[in-house]
Image 1 (tube, one colour):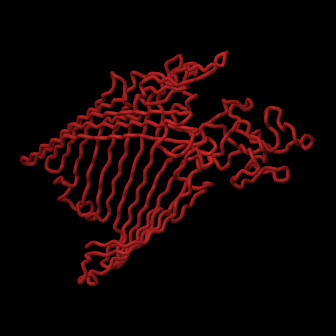
Image 2 (image 1 turned 90 degrees about the horizontal axis):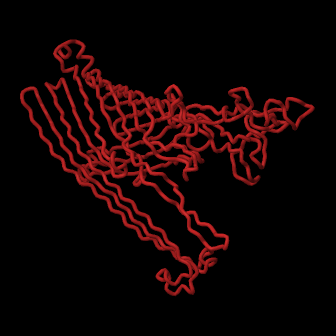
Image 3 (image 1 turned 120 degrees about the horizontal axis):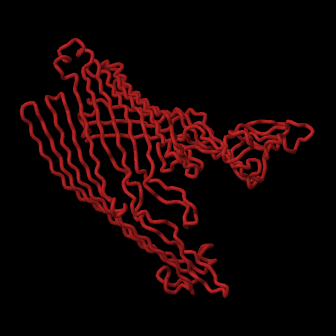
Length: 530
Protein backbone atom coordinates (compact mmCIF):
# COMPACT_ATOMS: atom_id res chain seq x y z
CA UNK A 1 0.00 0.00 0.00
CA UNK A 2 3.04 2.27 0.06
CA UNK A 3 3.14 2.69 -3.73
CA UNK A 4 0.85 4.55 -6.11
CA UNK A 5 -0.48 1.32 -7.62
CA UNK A 6 -0.98 -0.29 -4.22
CA UNK A 7 -2.66 2.74 -2.69
CA UNK A 8 -5.07 3.18 -5.64
CA UNK A 9 -6.24 -0.46 -5.31
CA UNK A 10 -6.06 -0.60 -1.52
CA UNK A 11 -3.25 -3.11 -1.73
CA UNK A 12 -2.04 -5.40 -4.56
CA UNK A 13 -0.48 -8.80 -3.95
CA UNK A 14 1.15 -11.00 -6.62
CA UNK A 15 2.52 -14.50 -6.14
CA UNK A 16 4.39 -16.50 -8.77
CA UNK A 17 5.20 -20.17 -8.27
CA UNK A 18 7.09 -21.92 -11.08
CA UNK A 19 9.09 -25.06 -11.59
CA UNK A 20 11.41 -25.99 -14.47
CA UNK A 21 13.08 -29.34 -15.10
CA UNK A 22 15.42 -30.38 -17.92
CA UNK A 23 17.38 -33.58 -18.44
CA UNK A 24 19.30 -35.30 -21.21
CA UNK A 25 20.55 -38.88 -21.41
CA UNK A 26 23.07 -39.99 -24.03
CA UNK A 27 24.37 -43.49 -24.65
CA UNK A 28 27.37 -43.64 -27.00
CA UNK A 29 29.17 -46.72 -28.27
CA UNK A 30 32.24 -46.66 -30.49
CA UNK A 31 34.42 -49.19 -32.30
CA UNK A 32 37.80 -48.57 -33.95
CA UNK A 33 40.08 -50.87 -35.93
CA UNK A 34 43.12 -50.55 -38.19
CA UNK A 35 44.35 -53.25 -40.57
CA UNK A 36 46.96 -52.55 -43.21
CA UNK A 37 46.15 -49.28 -44.94
CA UNK A 38 42.54 -49.41 -43.78
CA UNK A 39 41.08 -47.64 -40.75
CA UNK A 40 37.46 -47.72 -39.62
CA UNK A 41 35.70 -45.95 -36.80
CA UNK A 42 32.05 -46.53 -35.90
CA UNK A 43 29.90 -44.48 -33.53
CA UNK A 44 26.41 -45.33 -32.29
CA UNK A 45 24.19 -42.96 -30.30
CA UNK A 46 20.89 -43.19 -28.46
CA UNK A 47 19.74 -39.95 -26.87
CA UNK A 48 16.65 -38.84 -24.97
CA UNK A 49 15.90 -35.45 -23.48
CA UNK A 50 12.99 -33.67 -21.86
CA UNK A 51 12.05 -30.16 -20.85
CA UNK A 52 9.15 -29.38 -18.52
CA UNK A 53 7.86 -26.07 -17.15
CA UNK A 54 4.97 -25.32 -14.80
CA UNK A 55 3.81 -21.93 -13.52
CA UNK A 56 0.96 -20.75 -11.28
CA UNK A 57 0.29 -17.09 -10.51
CA UNK A 58 -2.22 -15.34 -8.25
CA UNK A 59 -3.14 -11.69 -7.86
CA UNK A 60 -5.21 -10.18 -5.07
CA UNK A 61 -6.53 -6.62 -4.68
CA UNK A 62 -8.30 -4.58 -2.01
CA UNK A 63 -7.10 -5.73 1.43
CA UNK A 64 -8.43 -4.67 4.84
CA UNK A 65 -4.87 -4.02 6.07
CA UNK A 66 -1.25 -4.98 5.44
CA UNK A 67 -0.48 -6.61 8.79
CA UNK A 68 0.29 -10.01 7.21
CA UNK A 69 2.23 -8.51 4.29
CA UNK A 70 2.18 -10.91 1.32
CA UNK A 71 0.93 -13.90 3.33
CA UNK A 72 -2.73 -12.92 3.12
CA UNK A 73 -3.95 -13.69 -0.41
CA UNK A 74 -7.15 -15.14 1.10
CA UNK A 75 -8.00 -11.71 2.59
CA UNK A 76 -8.24 -10.02 -0.84
CA UNK A 77 -11.62 -8.73 -1.95
CA UNK A 78 -10.89 -9.79 -5.56
CA UNK A 79 -8.58 -12.53 -6.73
CA UNK A 80 -7.46 -13.75 -10.15
CA UNK A 81 -5.04 -16.41 -11.25
CA UNK A 82 -3.34 -17.99 -14.21
CA UNK A 83 -1.55 -21.25 -14.98
CA UNK A 84 0.97 -22.26 -17.62
CA UNK A 85 2.46 -25.64 -18.46
CA UNK A 86 4.41 -27.24 -21.29
CA UNK A 87 6.54 -30.30 -21.83
CA UNK A 88 8.77 -31.27 -24.77
CA UNK A 89 10.42 -34.64 -25.40
CA UNK A 90 13.12 -35.65 -27.90
CA UNK A 91 14.42 -39.06 -28.90
CA UNK A 92 17.36 -39.58 -31.27
CA UNK A 93 19.27 -42.54 -32.71
CA UNK A 94 22.37 -42.16 -34.83
CA UNK A 95 24.92 -44.43 -36.51
CA UNK A 96 28.10 -43.15 -38.16
CA UNK A 97 30.86 -44.99 -40.00
CA UNK A 98 34.19 -43.36 -40.87
CA UNK A 99 36.52 -45.17 -43.27
CA UNK A 100 40.01 -44.13 -44.37
CA UNK A 101 42.31 -45.82 -46.87
CA UNK A 102 46.01 -44.95 -46.81
CA UNK A 103 45.27 -41.39 -45.61
CA UNK A 104 44.21 -40.65 -49.18
CA UNK A 105 40.56 -41.61 -49.47
CA UNK A 106 37.99 -40.83 -46.77
CA UNK A 107 34.35 -41.88 -46.48
CA UNK A 108 31.72 -40.99 -43.87
CA UNK A 109 28.24 -42.50 -43.79
CA UNK A 110 25.64 -41.34 -41.27
CA UNK A 111 22.01 -42.23 -40.56
CA UNK A 112 20.03 -40.33 -37.95
CA UNK A 113 16.46 -40.73 -36.69
CA UNK A 114 14.94 -37.95 -34.59
CA UNK A 115 11.61 -37.68 -32.84
CA UNK A 116 9.92 -34.58 -31.42
CA UNK A 117 6.79 -34.68 -29.28
CA UNK A 118 5.34 -31.43 -30.66
CA UNK A 119 4.69 -32.90 -34.12
CA UNK A 120 1.55 -34.75 -35.18
CA UNK A 121 0.89 -38.31 -34.09
CA UNK A 122 1.80 -39.82 -37.47
CA UNK A 123 4.83 -37.61 -38.20
CA UNK A 124 6.81 -37.28 -34.98
CA UNK A 125 9.89 -39.04 -36.39
CA UNK A 126 12.15 -38.15 -39.29
CA UNK A 127 15.08 -40.05 -40.84
CA UNK A 128 18.05 -38.02 -42.07
CA UNK A 129 20.92 -39.78 -43.91
CA UNK A 130 24.16 -38.21 -45.12
CA UNK A 131 27.36 -39.20 -46.92
CA UNK A 132 30.70 -37.46 -47.41
CA UNK A 133 33.91 -38.27 -49.27
CA UNK A 134 37.33 -36.72 -49.11
CA UNK A 135 40.44 -37.04 -51.27
CA UNK A 136 43.87 -36.06 -49.95
CA UNK A 137 45.42 -35.31 -53.31
CA UNK A 138 48.69 -34.19 -51.76
CA UNK A 139 49.20 -37.75 -50.40
CA UNK A 140 49.11 -39.30 -53.85
CA UNK A 141 52.43 -40.56 -55.22
CA UNK A 142 51.93 -38.69 -58.50
CA UNK A 143 51.71 -35.46 -56.46
CA UNK A 144 54.00 -35.62 -53.44
CA UNK A 145 57.03 -36.80 -55.39
CA UNK A 146 56.79 -33.95 -57.89
CA UNK A 147 58.19 -30.39 -57.75
CA UNK A 148 54.68 -28.99 -57.34
CA UNK A 149 54.57 -30.42 -53.80
CA UNK A 150 57.24 -27.91 -52.77
CA UNK A 151 54.76 -25.13 -53.50
CA UNK A 152 51.45 -26.85 -52.66
CA UNK A 153 52.11 -28.61 -49.37
CA UNK A 154 48.52 -29.75 -48.85
CA UNK A 155 45.55 -30.19 -51.19
CA UNK A 156 42.27 -31.88 -50.27
CA UNK A 157 38.94 -32.17 -52.09
CA UNK A 158 35.62 -32.64 -50.26
CA UNK A 159 32.09 -33.59 -51.36
CA UNK A 160 29.07 -34.26 -49.16
CA UNK A 161 25.34 -34.89 -49.46
CA UNK A 162 22.81 -35.10 -46.67
CA UNK A 163 19.45 -34.33 -45.15
CA UNK A 164 18.67 -32.60 -41.89
CA UNK A 165 15.47 -31.64 -40.12
CA UNK A 166 14.09 -28.49 -38.57
CA UNK A 167 11.70 -28.60 -35.61
CA UNK A 168 11.00 -24.86 -35.39
CA UNK A 169 7.65 -25.09 -33.61
CA UNK A 170 6.78 -24.99 -29.93
CA UNK A 171 5.00 -27.61 -27.86
CA UNK A 172 1.30 -28.24 -28.65
CA UNK A 173 1.50 -26.41 -32.01
CA UNK A 174 -0.48 -29.21 -33.67
CA UNK A 175 -3.39 -28.97 -31.20
CA UNK A 176 -6.40 -26.64 -31.47
CA UNK A 177 -6.85 -23.86 -28.97
CA UNK A 178 -9.87 -22.03 -27.60
CA UNK A 179 -9.70 -18.46 -26.29
CA UNK A 180 -12.25 -16.76 -24.09
CA UNK A 181 -14.59 -14.04 -25.29
CA UNK A 182 -16.82 -12.88 -22.45
CA UNK A 183 -19.90 -10.73 -23.01
CA UNK A 184 -23.12 -9.51 -21.37
CA UNK A 185 -26.64 -10.79 -21.96
CA UNK A 186 -29.59 -8.47 -22.53
CA UNK A 187 -30.26 -8.65 -18.80
CA UNK A 188 -26.60 -7.65 -18.15
CA UNK A 189 -25.62 -11.01 -16.72
CA UNK A 190 -22.08 -12.15 -17.55
CA UNK A 191 -21.68 -14.90 -20.12
CA UNK A 192 -18.47 -16.77 -20.85
CA UNK A 193 -17.80 -17.60 -24.47
CA UNK A 194 -15.05 -19.34 -26.40
CA UNK A 195 -13.82 -19.19 -29.98
CA UNK A 196 -11.20 -21.25 -31.92
CA UNK A 197 -8.12 -19.01 -31.81
CA UNK A 198 -5.89 -21.76 -33.26
CA UNK A 199 -6.75 -24.62 -35.58
CA UNK A 200 -5.41 -28.16 -35.29
CA UNK A 201 -2.57 -29.34 -37.56
CA UNK A 202 -2.47 -33.11 -36.87
CA UNK A 203 -0.24 -33.84 -39.88
CA UNK A 204 2.45 -31.28 -39.00
CA UNK A 205 5.92 -32.83 -39.25
CA UNK A 206 9.60 -32.24 -39.93
CA UNK A 207 10.85 -29.56 -42.27
CA UNK A 208 13.57 -31.27 -44.33
CA UNK A 209 16.59 -29.75 -46.07
CA UNK A 210 18.65 -31.70 -48.62
CA UNK A 211 22.11 -30.23 -49.20
CA UNK A 212 25.13 -30.75 -51.43
CA UNK A 213 28.44 -29.22 -50.42
CA UNK A 214 31.73 -29.33 -52.26
CA UNK A 215 35.02 -27.60 -51.64
CA UNK A 216 38.74 -27.87 -51.23
CA UNK A 217 41.49 -27.06 -48.71
CA UNK A 218 44.89 -25.89 -49.87
CA UNK A 219 48.13 -24.93 -48.13
CA UNK A 220 51.09 -23.26 -49.84
CA UNK A 221 54.76 -23.18 -48.87
CA UNK A 222 54.48 -25.44 -45.83
CA UNK A 223 51.39 -23.71 -44.49
CA UNK A 224 52.48 -20.12 -44.91
CA UNK A 225 49.23 -19.56 -46.80
CA UNK A 226 46.18 -21.69 -46.01
CA UNK A 227 42.85 -21.41 -47.74
CA UNK A 228 39.52 -23.18 -48.11
CA UNK A 229 36.63 -22.68 -50.51
CA UNK A 230 33.15 -24.17 -50.17
CA UNK A 231 30.11 -23.93 -52.39
CA UNK A 232 26.74 -25.42 -51.52
CA UNK A 233 23.25 -25.97 -52.86
CA UNK A 234 20.24 -26.96 -50.78
CA UNK A 235 16.51 -27.45 -51.18
CA UNK A 236 14.08 -27.34 -48.28
CA UNK A 237 10.62 -28.89 -48.48
CA UNK A 238 7.66 -29.18 -46.10
CA UNK A 239 8.46 -25.77 -44.65
CA UNK A 240 6.96 -24.96 -41.25
CA UNK A 241 5.11 -21.84 -42.31
CA UNK A 242 2.25 -19.83 -40.91
CA UNK A 243 -0.28 -19.43 -43.75
CA UNK A 244 -2.85 -16.65 -43.85
CA UNK A 245 -6.46 -17.88 -43.89
CA UNK A 246 -9.87 -16.13 -43.72
CA UNK A 247 -10.65 -15.00 -40.17
CA UNK A 248 -14.08 -16.65 -40.42
CA UNK A 249 -12.22 -19.68 -39.05
CA UNK A 250 -11.66 -17.80 -35.78
CA UNK A 251 -7.99 -17.14 -36.52
CA UNK A 252 -6.12 -15.51 -39.37
CA UNK A 253 -3.33 -18.06 -39.75
CA UNK A 254 -2.42 -21.74 -39.44
CA UNK A 255 0.95 -23.51 -39.31
CA UNK A 256 1.45 -26.04 -42.08
CA UNK A 257 4.09 -28.06 -43.91
CA UNK A 258 3.94 -26.38 -47.27
CA UNK A 259 6.15 -25.11 -50.05
CA UNK A 260 9.79 -25.39 -51.01
CA UNK A 261 12.79 -23.09 -51.00
CA UNK A 262 16.13 -23.30 -52.76
CA UNK A 263 19.39 -21.95 -51.35
CA UNK A 264 22.88 -21.57 -52.66
CA UNK A 265 26.02 -19.84 -51.53
CA UNK A 266 29.74 -19.99 -51.07
CA UNK A 267 32.34 -19.26 -48.41
CA UNK A 268 35.98 -18.39 -48.91
CA UNK A 269 38.61 -18.26 -46.17
CA UNK A 270 42.33 -17.54 -46.37
CA UNK A 271 45.01 -17.18 -43.69
CA UNK A 272 48.51 -15.98 -44.46
CA UNK A 273 51.65 -15.52 -42.40
CA UNK A 274 52.84 -12.37 -44.14
CA UNK A 275 56.02 -11.79 -42.09
CA UNK A 276 57.64 -14.35 -39.79
CA UNK A 277 60.85 -12.75 -38.51
CA UNK A 278 62.20 -13.59 -35.06
CA UNK A 279 61.31 -10.22 -33.52
CA UNK A 280 58.33 -9.32 -35.71
CA UNK A 281 55.47 -11.26 -37.28
CA UNK A 282 52.29 -10.35 -39.10
CA UNK A 283 49.43 -12.70 -39.99
CA UNK A 284 46.13 -12.05 -41.75
CA UNK A 285 42.88 -14.01 -41.87
CA UNK A 286 40.09 -13.08 -44.30
CA UNK A 287 36.62 -14.58 -44.65
CA UNK A 288 33.96 -13.87 -47.29
CA UNK A 289 30.54 -15.51 -47.63
CA UNK A 290 27.56 -15.08 -49.93
CA UNK A 291 24.08 -16.56 -49.48
CA UNK A 292 21.05 -16.57 -51.74
CA UNK A 293 17.63 -18.01 -50.90
CA UNK A 294 14.53 -18.19 -53.06
CA UNK A 295 11.02 -19.63 -52.83
CA UNK A 296 10.21 -22.42 -55.29
CA UNK A 297 6.68 -23.29 -54.18
CA UNK A 298 4.27 -21.95 -51.53
CA UNK A 299 1.52 -24.53 -52.05
CA UNK A 300 -0.65 -22.35 -54.30
CA UNK A 301 -1.13 -23.09 -58.02
CA UNK A 302 -2.87 -21.58 -61.02
CA UNK A 303 -5.25 -23.39 -63.38
CA UNK A 304 -2.27 -24.91 -65.20
CA UNK A 305 -0.70 -26.27 -62.02
CA UNK A 306 2.07 -23.64 -61.99
CA UNK A 307 3.18 -22.33 -58.53
CA UNK A 308 1.98 -18.79 -57.84
CA UNK A 309 2.72 -16.15 -55.21
CA UNK A 310 1.05 -15.96 -51.81
CA UNK A 311 0.75 -12.18 -51.70
CA UNK A 312 -1.15 -12.14 -48.38
CA UNK A 313 1.81 -13.84 -46.66
CA UNK A 314 4.39 -11.84 -48.68
CA UNK A 315 5.83 -14.99 -50.30
CA UNK A 316 6.88 -14.64 -53.91
CA UNK A 317 8.24 -17.26 -56.28
CA UNK A 318 11.94 -16.64 -56.94
CA UNK A 319 12.35 -14.38 -53.88
CA UNK A 320 13.50 -15.08 -50.28
CA UNK A 321 10.92 -15.87 -47.58
CA UNK A 322 11.53 -12.51 -45.89
CA UNK A 323 11.24 -9.52 -48.23
CA UNK A 324 10.68 -5.77 -48.03
CA UNK A 325 7.26 -5.60 -49.75
CA UNK A 326 5.90 -2.08 -49.72
CA UNK A 327 5.05 0.99 -51.77
CA UNK A 328 8.25 2.58 -53.02
CA UNK A 329 8.67 6.24 -52.09
CA UNK A 330 10.21 8.17 -54.99
CA UNK A 331 9.92 11.71 -53.64
CA UNK A 332 7.44 14.39 -52.57
CA UNK A 333 4.69 16.02 -54.62
CA UNK A 334 5.68 19.57 -55.55
CA UNK A 335 3.68 22.65 -56.51
CA UNK A 336 3.45 22.17 -60.26
CA UNK A 337 0.49 24.50 -60.82
CA UNK A 338 1.04 27.95 -59.20
CA UNK A 339 -2.65 28.77 -59.66
CA UNK A 340 -3.58 25.76 -57.49
CA UNK A 341 -0.86 25.69 -54.82
CA UNK A 342 -2.81 23.63 -52.21
CA UNK A 343 -4.90 21.31 -54.39
CA UNK A 344 -4.34 18.24 -56.55
CA UNK A 345 -1.33 18.67 -58.81
CA UNK A 346 -2.03 15.64 -61.05
CA UNK A 347 -5.63 14.59 -61.82
CA UNK A 348 -4.49 10.98 -62.33
CA UNK A 349 -3.52 10.61 -58.65
CA UNK A 350 -5.87 10.94 -55.70
CA UNK A 351 -3.30 12.16 -53.17
CA UNK A 352 -1.05 14.37 -55.25
CA UNK A 353 -1.20 17.32 -52.83
CA UNK A 354 1.98 19.41 -52.40
CA UNK A 355 4.11 18.06 -49.58
CA UNK A 356 2.59 14.56 -49.73
CA UNK A 357 4.63 11.43 -50.30
CA UNK A 358 4.98 10.43 -53.95
CA UNK A 359 4.88 6.68 -54.70
CA UNK A 360 6.11 4.64 -57.62
CA UNK A 361 3.13 3.86 -59.88
CA UNK A 362 4.00 0.39 -61.18
CA UNK A 363 0.90 -0.26 -63.32
CA UNK A 364 0.16 3.35 -64.36
CA UNK A 365 -3.32 3.26 -62.83
CA UNK A 366 -3.18 5.51 -59.76
CA UNK A 367 -1.82 4.06 -56.51
CA UNK A 368 -3.36 0.73 -55.49
CA UNK A 369 -2.12 -2.41 -53.73
CA UNK A 370 -0.94 -3.60 -57.14
CA UNK A 371 1.81 -0.98 -56.91
CA UNK A 372 3.51 -2.63 -53.94
CA UNK A 373 6.91 -3.94 -54.93
CA UNK A 374 9.94 -5.70 -53.46
CA UNK A 375 12.47 -3.14 -52.25
CA UNK A 376 16.09 -4.26 -52.10
CA UNK A 377 17.16 -7.39 -50.24
CA UNK A 378 16.00 -8.09 -46.69
CA UNK A 379 19.11 -10.19 -45.98
CA UNK A 380 22.79 -9.29 -46.55
CA UNK A 381 24.24 -10.48 -49.85
CA UNK A 382 27.85 -10.50 -48.66
CA UNK A 383 29.44 -10.83 -45.21
CA UNK A 384 33.17 -10.27 -44.69
CA UNK A 385 35.65 -10.27 -41.85
CA UNK A 386 39.35 -9.45 -41.62
CA UNK A 387 41.74 -10.15 -38.75
CA UNK A 388 45.28 -8.78 -38.61
CA UNK A 389 47.64 -9.86 -35.85
CA UNK A 390 51.01 -8.21 -35.21
CA UNK A 391 53.71 -9.35 -32.79
CA UNK A 392 56.80 -7.29 -32.01
CA UNK A 393 59.06 -8.71 -29.32
CA UNK A 394 56.72 -8.91 -26.29
CA UNK A 395 53.95 -6.75 -27.75
CA UNK A 396 50.90 -8.10 -29.60
CA UNK A 397 48.25 -6.17 -31.50
CA UNK A 398 45.15 -7.64 -33.12
CA UNK A 399 42.57 -5.73 -35.17
CA UNK A 400 39.31 -7.39 -36.23
CA UNK A 401 37.06 -5.80 -38.88
CA UNK A 402 33.62 -6.92 -40.09
CA UNK A 403 31.59 -5.76 -43.08
CA UNK A 404 28.13 -6.38 -44.51
CA UNK A 405 26.86 -5.51 -47.98
CA UNK A 406 23.63 -5.71 -49.94
CA UNK A 407 20.89 -5.47 -47.29
CA UNK A 408 18.03 -2.94 -47.34
CA UNK A 409 15.92 -2.28 -44.25
CA UNK A 410 13.13 0.07 -43.24
CA UNK A 411 14.29 2.94 -41.05
CA UNK A 412 11.78 3.66 -38.27
CA UNK A 413 13.44 7.02 -37.59
CA UNK A 414 11.65 8.34 -40.69
CA UNK A 415 8.16 7.49 -39.39
CA UNK A 416 5.61 10.01 -40.70
CA UNK A 417 2.82 9.32 -38.18
CA UNK A 418 3.46 12.35 -35.95
CA UNK A 419 0.81 12.50 -33.23
CA UNK A 420 2.46 15.23 -31.21
CA UNK A 421 4.68 18.20 -31.91
CA UNK A 422 6.57 17.31 -28.72
CA UNK A 423 7.45 13.83 -29.93
CA UNK A 424 11.20 13.10 -29.84
CA UNK A 425 12.28 12.19 -33.34
CA UNK A 426 15.07 12.32 -35.88
CA UNK A 427 15.79 15.72 -37.41
CA UNK A 428 14.47 15.43 -40.98
CA UNK A 429 14.38 17.82 -43.93
CA UNK A 430 10.66 18.67 -43.94
CA UNK A 431 9.05 19.87 -47.17
CA UNK A 432 7.72 23.41 -47.23
CA UNK A 433 6.75 25.64 -50.15
CA UNK A 434 9.98 27.56 -49.51
CA UNK A 435 11.98 24.32 -49.16
CA UNK A 436 10.67 22.06 -51.97
CA UNK A 437 12.76 19.03 -50.97
CA UNK A 438 12.14 15.48 -52.18
CA UNK A 439 13.65 13.96 -49.04
CA UNK A 440 10.72 14.09 -46.61
CA UNK A 441 7.05 15.19 -46.68
CA UNK A 442 5.65 18.24 -44.95
CA UNK A 443 5.24 18.39 -41.18
CA UNK A 444 1.75 17.27 -40.15
CA UNK A 445 0.07 16.05 -36.99
CA UNK A 446 -1.77 13.39 -38.99
CA UNK A 447 -0.53 10.62 -41.23
CA UNK A 448 -2.35 12.07 -44.26
CA UNK A 449 0.96 13.08 -45.88
CA UNK A 450 1.74 9.36 -46.25
CA UNK A 451 -1.75 7.98 -47.04
CA UNK A 452 -0.53 4.47 -47.92
CA UNK A 453 1.65 4.22 -44.80
CA UNK A 454 4.81 3.35 -46.73
CA UNK A 455 8.13 3.08 -44.91
CA UNK A 456 11.43 4.69 -45.77
CA UNK A 457 14.15 2.17 -46.64
CA UNK A 458 17.94 2.48 -46.53
CA UNK A 459 20.91 0.29 -47.26
CA UNK A 460 22.60 -1.10 -44.17
CA UNK A 461 26.09 -1.53 -45.70
CA UNK A 462 28.78 -1.00 -43.10
CA UNK A 463 32.44 -1.52 -42.20
CA UNK A 464 33.12 -1.91 -38.49
CA UNK A 465 36.30 -2.02 -36.42
CA UNK A 466 34.81 -4.62 -34.11
CA UNK A 467 37.69 -5.51 -31.83
CA UNK A 468 41.15 -4.12 -31.07
CA UNK A 469 43.43 -5.75 -28.50
CA UNK A 470 46.88 -4.57 -27.45
CA UNK A 471 48.87 -6.78 -25.10
CA UNK A 472 52.27 -7.06 -23.48
CA UNK A 473 53.81 -10.36 -22.30
CA UNK A 474 56.27 -9.83 -19.45
CA UNK A 475 59.66 -11.47 -20.13
CA UNK A 476 60.19 -14.84 -18.50
CA UNK A 477 63.41 -13.70 -16.80
CA UNK A 478 61.38 -11.18 -14.85
CA UNK A 479 59.17 -13.94 -13.47
CA UNK A 480 61.75 -16.61 -12.63
CA UNK A 481 61.90 -15.82 -8.95
CA UNK A 482 58.13 -15.53 -8.54
CA UNK A 483 55.31 -18.06 -8.47
CA UNK A 484 53.95 -16.64 -11.75
CA UNK A 485 54.61 -18.67 -14.91
CA UNK A 486 53.16 -16.17 -17.39
CA UNK A 487 51.91 -12.60 -17.05
CA UNK A 488 50.09 -10.59 -19.72
CA UNK A 489 48.89 -6.98 -19.57
CA UNK A 490 46.24 -6.09 -22.13
CA UNK A 491 43.76 -3.46 -23.30
CA UNK A 492 40.70 -4.26 -25.41
CA UNK A 493 38.32 -1.97 -27.31
CA UNK A 494 35.08 -3.28 -28.83
CA UNK A 495 33.07 -1.44 -31.49
CA UNK A 496 35.71 1.23 -31.96
CA UNK A 497 34.18 2.73 -35.12
CA UNK A 498 31.54 2.03 -37.78
CA UNK A 499 31.54 3.45 -41.30
CA UNK A 500 28.05 3.33 -42.82
CA UNK A 501 25.48 5.27 -44.81
CA UNK A 502 22.68 4.01 -42.55
CA UNK A 503 20.89 6.74 -40.59
CA UNK A 504 20.49 5.59 -37.03
CA UNK A 505 22.07 3.52 -34.31
CA UNK A 506 23.29 0.10 -35.45
CA UNK A 507 23.01 -1.20 -39.05
CA UNK A 508 23.92 -4.78 -38.05
CA UNK A 509 21.32 -5.80 -35.45
CA UNK A 510 18.02 -4.45 -36.71
CA UNK A 511 14.34 -5.08 -36.15
CA UNK A 512 11.21 -3.18 -37.05
CA UNK A 513 11.71 -0.91 -34.06
CA UNK A 514 14.61 1.40 -33.38
CA UNK A 515 17.79 -0.60 -32.87
CA UNK A 516 19.86 0.03 -29.76
CA UNK A 517 23.25 1.67 -30.32
CA UNK A 518 26.32 -0.58 -30.35
CA UNK A 519 28.13 -0.47 -27.03
CA UNK A 520 31.72 0.74 -27.21
CA UNK A 521 33.61 -0.82 -24.33
CA UNK A 522 37.15 -0.41 -23.01
CA UNK A 523 38.69 -3.20 -20.96
CA UNK A 524 42.02 -3.25 -19.14
CA UNK A 525 43.25 -6.39 -17.46
CA UNK A 526 45.95 -8.78 -16.36
CA UNK A 527 46.22 -12.47 -17.22
CA UNK A 528 48.48 -14.68 -15.20
CA UNK A 529 49.31 -18.38 -14.96
CA UNK A 530 50.66 -19.75 -11.70
